[in-house]
Amino acid sequence: MLLYNKQKRNQKLKTTKRFLVSINVLGSAGPIRFVVKEDETVANVIDYALKCYAREGRLPLLGSDSSFFLLYCPYYASQAFDPWGNIGSTGSRNFVLSKKLETQNLEDSVMTTTAIWRLKAWLNKSLGLMVPSH
Image (cartoon, rainbow, N blue to C red; front, side):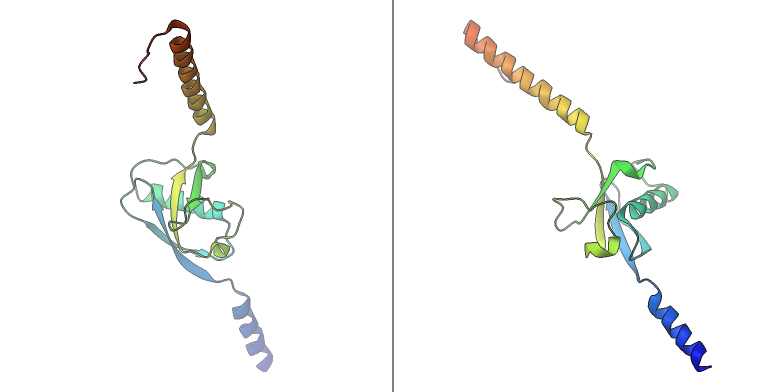
C-alpha cells in the first residue's frame, strides 16, 4: 500500500501544469479563452485558437492556416513570440493574435512609392515643373 501511494504521488508531480489563456483577435468582439498545457508550442496554441474562433462563428473570417498568424503580448507587442517556443515560457497569460504582414506586397508597395518619388524629382529637376505630391 505504501508503494502504491508513492507511485501515485510521483505521477501527480510529473503532470504538466495547465493555465487559462485569453487571446484577443484584432477586429473581433471579445477574447477567446481556453486552457492549455504549459509545454504546448505557440504554433499549437495559435492553431487551437483559430479552430475555436471558427467554431464560435466569429467575424471577421480568418481562415485555418496558423502559419499566417503571429501571437503577441498586449503589453509589449513589439516582437511576436517564437512559434516553436513553449507557451509557458512567455510569462504571459493574455495574448493578441494578428495576421502576418505580406512581406512581398509590402516590398512592392515600398518600391512603387520610391519609384514615384524618383520620377517626380526627375520631372521637377529636368523640366522645371512643380509636380504636386498629392
